[in-house]
Length: 174
Ligand code: AIR
Image 1 (cartoon, rainbow, N blue to C red):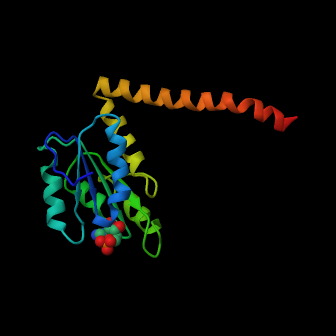
Image 2 (image 1 turned 180 degrees about the horizontal axis):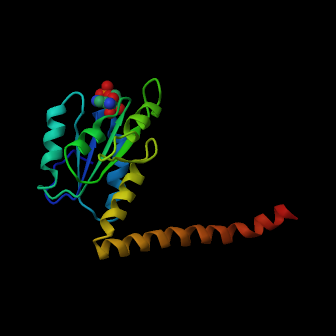
Image 3 (image 1 turned 45 degrees about the horizontal axis):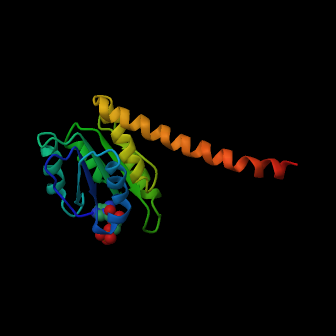
């Protein structure tokens, strides 16, 4: 997927470095199945702080509804975005560096009262997208229907696999 500042994007996916791309692309891939338009951008809270603030301040007027932000190590990207807008911000701590994501997890999740960042698991970019869809689905009936249908289809797939396993399970139990 290309870096894009898509017109009509409802979700902004940001990351601290080009080296985060493959991990954060999982969020865009998850959004694709819901046909939710998104844009992806590399913007470091430390290397380009003014740009990060500017992006967050303009996000709502540009039609964005939720921001997803991932970075590794001292991850301040999600917090910096949250500080500059009132859109929901979902933070993705990324693995890497000497502490392999635990540093990013703490930096992302420990926000001060009044400026929250909803934090998902280390490298949990796909779940950030699912959470974003769940939030948007509150006000979007077709999206809610798609979300429920997908959850149901996944459950049915697992149920079918369970049925296939059953003779084997019985054999083992004998
Ligand atoms: N990073 C970049 N600016 C601020 C932070 N926290 C993070 C990136 C990446 C890691 O530092 O999100 O996960 C290493 O970045 P790079 O560009 O050196 O590969």
